[in-house]
Image 1 (cartoon, helix red, strand yellow):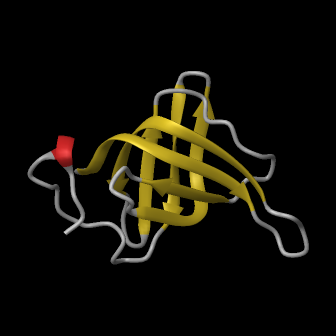
Image 2: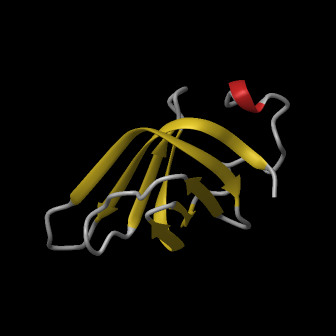
Length: 108
């Protein structure tokens, strides 16, 4: 599965429920690998335990160039050695092809 981005990002894990105040935990400068995980799905991998609120159901990833992906968490694994999360995205949010230069990926 080709990588869409690899590098530093700001990742926010949220618990968003109707009738409740939103709870968010943001981790800045987290090294991630962002991948297309199929139709309307993206996946991030991370090398450390990712803190988040109990009942977390939404993930937001902001890349250094300002591109932001956000969606409902569909699946994942989070442990002391890192993990991964899959989340829904709009079809236009994540390109299907691998960019030529992963170290300087830019939205085009």
